[in-house]
Length: 121
Image 1 (cartoon, rainbow, N blue to C red):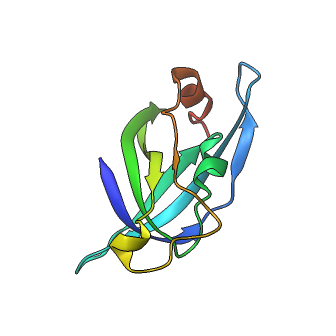
Image 2 (tube, rainbow, N blue to C red):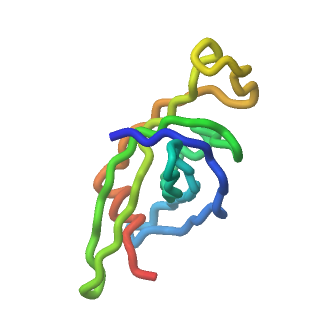
């Protein structure tokens, strides 16, 4: 699945250590979709993909996402995780391509990485 839009806000990076002792990090970005009724959607980037994607504020992106829900204490929580980010090419948009970043292709998180990012809070 894909979401297209502009990044309107970057949330602080979160990090920690899993029960298995491995370090993890995660960052949320607020993407505003295009159209007559734009939506604001929080997308999550996990691990090394934060640096690979190097998403900036006011940047137009296409985020390839997967949606996952988890239960914790009889409540359900949903994550919209970006596993790949693309930027429009200079020819498509008519605008100069971002100079500080290149599009990156991330890998989907492993089962262990997903577990590390699991709730509780």
